[in-house]
Amino acid sequence: MANKPAFDPGLTTQFDAPLRRAINKDGSFNVRRKGVSWGAFHPWLAIVNMSWLGFAALVIVLYVAINWAFALAYYSMPAEAIAGSAAATDAGRLMNDFFFSGHTLTTVGYGNLYPTGFEANVVATLEALVGLLSFSVITGMLVARVSRPSARIGYSENALVAPYQEGMALMFRIANERSNSLVELDVKLMLMSVTGMKGGTPERKFDYLTLERDNVLLFPLTWTIVHPIDATSPLAGKTAQDLADMQAEFIVFIRAFDETFSQTVRSRFSYRADEVVWGAKFLPAFRVEESGGLLLEVDKIGEHKRL
Image (cartoon, rainbow, N blue to C red; front, side):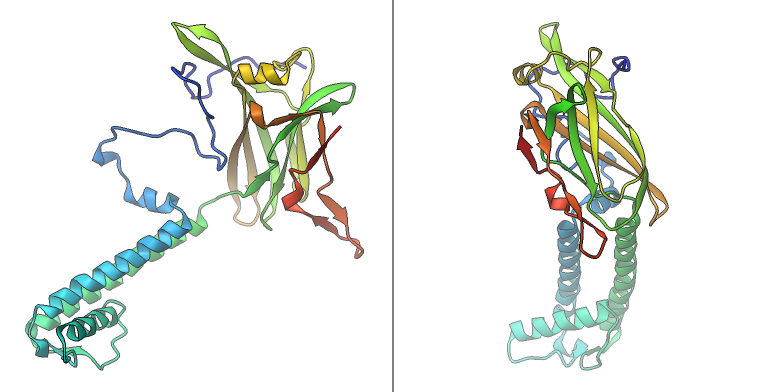
């Protein structure tokens, strides 16, 4: 079983210091950009890629900020410019203007507050336009976020080195955490390691690791991905300490077809040398229920025991 030749997958082969990891646990690259010009910033891309909590916070902040901006514009006018906004205190009137701004921005218009005079009507008309445009943009962002292809594949917390057939093998387990149907999965496993020094800096090597099976047609349960450690494997004869000295990182690339959205989805993950458990095997993560159906316990895909 021969390994594919060494290659550079797009990560530099030389680092001037130990690299914590190339791929983060969430699948993102462990790269921080610095010195990027403002012209390279893409607000739409940033918003689509931010977390749902960040997106919700951004929408709320923008909504409140726009409301207050127009509320202050109304407040700068005479009190009679917004009929019904007069109050016993300036703070009370300002809050009335804020609520009128909210009515106008959302085009609700209850009628208890309304603009009078040319100046107030112009500002209210402008705010209504801003409201229509801003809600259209937010809706577009929301659609872009929910419709983009994504996979939620769960990985075992650790990779294992365990007996396999008549030898040993490196293995890890995955499962689909969502109820959508993933089919035609392909997986690639790459070893990134330090091989020596070049020009006074550590030089890294990248090797594809051959797998017992690198694709499956269906993925309703778990899949244990296995790299047999034979004489041709870069791991042949290696120990846990050897992997630590090599600063080994096993990088996983998965591609699948999502039948729900009819789109190809991808997932990345990695295991460092200290996340590899030697001499252990995975415990079952699914069982047959009394009804005759299969129960997959996704939170147990990483459970293992020492041999």
